[in-house]
Image (cartoon, rainbow, N blue to C red):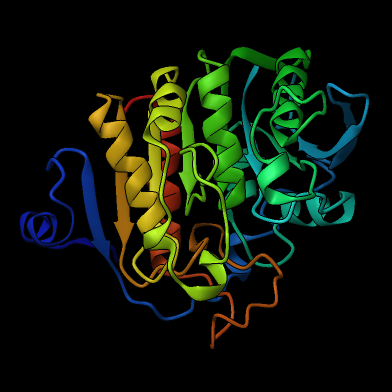
Length: 309
């Protein structure tokens, strides 16, 4: 089971942040059999609806939608995957059913949420992952279109829409939080908020020097200033992008935002979703479902329900 380690010592040695805002957890890193945690909602009761949502430039964004039984209104969880954008419908449908061993999507469905697993466009990372005034639409426009679609559903509670972004999807979700200020809750797991923090990506990923990535504090402060929704940040100690995640937390905390960061020992990049069907040369054991993933999921669910940290 998950245990809370010596939080004070951890904070003093590694973060220097406030005790109330950063929590550190440890659990057995062994892989768990995931069969008990997936395919728990019969598709006969909650079929996967394949939809295409019109974005700002007329392009269509793929999304897979599952709803609880009944008429609603139901709260909504919109989930944005990691890089690259442009995964396509087949992948989204598989994720929405938990086909690869990830329990997150169905867990929210079990708890009475409409779950929308949404795509966003790919392309040059430095061009498409931030808003632009250059006359072309970006992934941010796609995300805004998905939020509008979620609120338009006749069975959705338009006042209770939350967003969850992982990795590159975390960059998108942070922009959404800054542009749609009445979201219910915001979750970013292993976020990659390069552009939200005003940085430009070079070869830092390839060289393992994410800690050297220079953010533009003026841009970061302007983006963060607009965020009004509580934000939960999840990251693992084995995540090479962790330094950037810490920068996001530090800047939000500096701005006095309602934010909490949870750090999970043994967590690889995007461990929070469990197996997603990716080939991962960076993981000798491959993707796996761990107890920390299940614990992070339950804590995330409690946060999203309440909308309070």
